[in-house]
Each structure stands twice: as structure tokens, then as C-alpha cells.
Length: 417
Ligand code: GLC
Image (cartoon, rainbow, N blue to C red; front, side, top):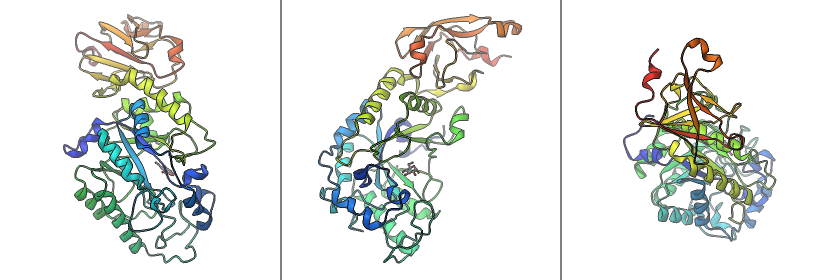
């Protein structure tokens, strides 16, 4: 993986983060794009402002949960497509300061992150369905056209945006990442990214904004390269939500299965990417029960197998079996079963060396290994390394990870014809 050799390299040390979508859309609990998808009028949508009063908001509770999941950084939606600002901005009254709550939630969150040494990244939507200068013209995340009282003017809108971004980069201490989204106008102004970098040296910027940025942001399971590549060469942060329908809090969410999320997480981490997993807190500031349960469950898996995914080299190319991913640290090889296993044995052709020890990290129990001449390989005239009798209760439930400790370099043999 390409490194930056500067302050941005924090990103490679903190590879699993919590994405938080929180705004007034949590009040109705339908979806973060409520105003766009349900064609709500501004007048109707803006009633939510008077109802936003997250009396139970406690950023430390969010960070506790993130840490239980094994996460070590956070990305927070400062402004989504609705244009509502979750910080004390001087550029508009359309902000959390003008809700019954009236407190700068970003400041509270930034403080909590600083106290724990938790890198904080900020999400900011370029599209803005509230600002009178934003030229709505019926693209995704826009109104069909200007709304009553609007004075569309892209240049003016960008002055506003630039000033807001400056606020975000100067008032909340160290900001580790800037996460642009919703640039449906494809407006590219690299000078804005340059300003961010000047105000926040060492900040990492994504590819959805003013230029190609520092890292890619494949979303959910839609990007095939994340599935097909064995190793991610460009800095990558895959993003995924716990719910399939929404990033913001949704009352009747259709959640992914735990196993689906764990597989997706294993897939990205084993290939050297970062993973940003989202929850949408409720309007009262708490995290929904099911989201919390899932995060803890993911944390249990992460705790047991984390040594296979961090500070390791992705090396899946060493075997032919495409149902497994491999990572290594020196003479230790990790085998990650990120797909639905179809049998109880795993062959690692063309590896032949036998490990000194083999352990299923999920249970801490040993795994039987052999250098077998299997019927299908008989013609090859030699046996290959095989893991046997993996327990069905683990195979069926989660992503099994096996650690193999070798006395010497295990790949030497494989390299030979
Ligand atoms: C999608 C959604 C948007 C969300 C983003 C996070 O683009 O449309 O609402 O903020 O994903 O990656």
C-alpha cells in the first residue's frame, strides 16, 4: 500500500472507524435523504428543527461503543444534503444552535475525541437543499428547480461553502480527515482542498469533493474492485452502514446480518483497506439498541482475530484458493475465510510446508493440518498444505480466521514450479 510519508499516515494506523450520520432527519427516523426522496417541501421539512432536542446526547457513550466494536477513529456528518449544520456556524441560522437543544454538538464531540486521542474526520455535503444560492436543477439530491425566494448563484454558494469549511477547520482543534460527499455539480476547486491542507496539516481528504483526494471511498458492496482485487493498492476506505436502507437513523430499518457485515469488514481489512462502518443515532442522541448490539458483536469477532488484520502484509496471491484471503507477519500466516465456506477443509495449494502450530483464532482451539495428497490433486504427484475439520458452528456463524506459525519462510516452496 502506498503511504504518504507525512502526517496523513495516521490513516494506516487506524483502519477501522465509526461513521456517524446524525441530523434533524433523525427526528422522523425515515432516512437521511428524507427531504429529497420523499419530495418534502422546505417548509414541511424545517418543522423538524423545532423538534430536535437530543437531551441524551453523550459523545462519550458513542466513543465507548466505537471502542467496544474495535474502532479507533470517527467520521461525523457536519452537514448532509438537507443543508442543516450540526455546528455553531456563523454563515446560517439553519443549525443546531437554533434548535431547542441549542448546543454545538460538534464541539462536544470534538472534545470527547480529543480527550481519548480518537482521530476525528468531518463529512460535508457539497449539495445543499437549503441554501438559497445553491442552483437546484433536478439532479440527484436537488430540488427540481429553484425554490421560492432562491437566487441561484454557484459562485456565491461556493463562497459560503469555503467559509463554512474554514470554520470547521479552525474551530474544533485537530481534524484528521475531510470527507466530501454529494458533489453532484462536479464542481472542482482544488484551491479549497489546498486551504483545508493549509489549515489542518496532516489531514486526509477523500475523493468525492474538489479533486481526486488522497483515498477512494467504495460504498456498500457496489464496487466490484473491492471484491475482486487481492490487495488494495490505492489508499481506500470502504464505507458501509449497519442498515441496508439508510445511513441516518431509521425506525424500521432492514439491518444487514452480522455475518454479512463481518465478512465485508474482513474482506477490506485483509486487503489492506480501511473500513468506515456507519450508525445513525436517534434524535434523542442515543444509539439504537440493534445498532449497539451489532457493534458489540462485531467487536467480539474483531477482538478474537484482530492480530490477523492489523500490522500485516496482505498476501492472498500465495495460494490458488480464491475462497480465502491471506495476510502475513514474518513467518506467521493468517487464513481468513471471508466467503461462505462450502466445505470443512481448506486447501492452500501450492503451499507445502507444514506449520509448527495452527490455531483457530475465533475459539483459540488448534486446527488439524496435513500435507495431503488429495484425490483431486493426485496427478500433481505431491501433497499440499490443508486445514482440516474446521468446526461447523464457527464456519456457519462468522468469519473464521486461522493462524499458522511456521519455523521458516513458508512461501519458499510455493514459489518453485
Ligand atoms: C450515499 C448516500 C448518502 C450517504 C453516503 C455515505 O452516497 O446517498 O446519503 O451520506 O452514501 O457514503
